[in-house]
Length: 308
Image 1: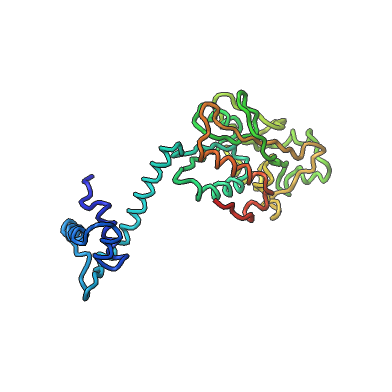
Image 2: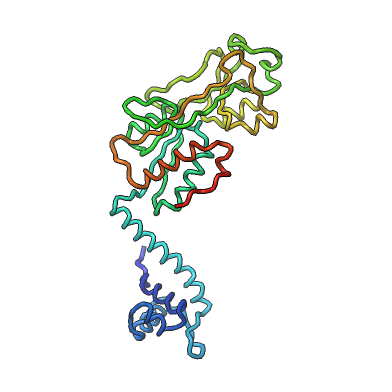
């Protein structure tokens, strides 16, 4: 890739000439001589091979090509300034990136609000979000490839901050044989039907969570796939209520009238990487995650954004 012929300083000079109405005014703003400003712009036009300004009376006016190039240059100069700011923040200990791993059962609505509130405070810090299931979250935080983790598991060696619970409910399609029983459903009834379960994404020691007593089971890779299968009449499953509210409302899914265990409410925890001190950006994100986790789920999108 060949080096640019025009420098950022030259683009800034052209912007000053246009924004402040002329070479003399730009020279005052830039604390340079008028001849220096004039030479810089003339040199730019020579290097680009395109006229950028024309003199209209006593005022410098952009040519059509100059107008297009100036608009593009503003974004270039802005990005360069942001890059310099990021380098300054990193020098002061501000992180370039926060890595967050989340169990797929945790409500996305809460994360969206937390991350939306984080954006204006991030100072260019990126967020790398990764979804796992069950022990997959544990493996990632233990490997040290995440700064923060949200999981319903008690991870040995880590102290997690308590968050909210997530309700899992037993559901099936309204026409499923279990609903056609038209009575309270027992575990013996479940044993004769196909259960849809979500595969643990962990590779080392995958875990089985919840009731798994059905003789026939289909294992899928995601909660959304499980919801789609069950909504189509393929088996029953325990699924997060927040994920299937629409299907329940539209009648595609119906709560199973179990004699016990129809609903379970695992408590989620927020963990941090114990080998790396939390940087200032990560601390801000932790506070926002906890704030929106405490809000009612149905108000997650209605709540006003916190001020920066």
